[in-house]
Image (tube, rainbow, N blue to C red):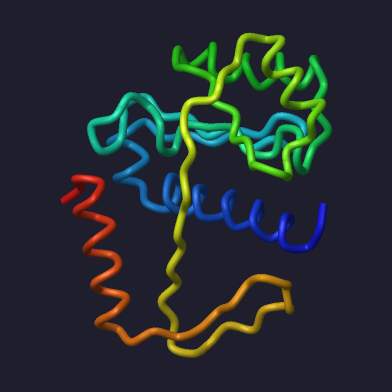
Length: 160
């Protein structure tokens, strides 16, 4: 996996962790938890966010990407979700999740749900120092642009 792929997975895991674990009120309101199984981050929720059926914040990240896919690991990850009584969703990254992992997931009854594109915004006083990653462009935006983005994203998800 190249640097861009590793960075994308770190951002996905970190942003999901911050969003689901960063505030005690949110953790309690939605029953959000995070456990790791052999390097796979297993995010769970007791209640759906934004009125959905346990989609956002309820997924396993790293299976077949940062961690090799095995039946034993898949069983351990599924055990996390079985214990919580919710569906097991494995985050599959197009082009980065190994073909072996995809085949293993299919053999175990997993199916594709949807395609999603995430945008991440960081508000800081100064531009962060980042390593050069081909294809990634970080630039500052004005506060009103950031506010417009966050308002649009909030409204799109029906949040308050």
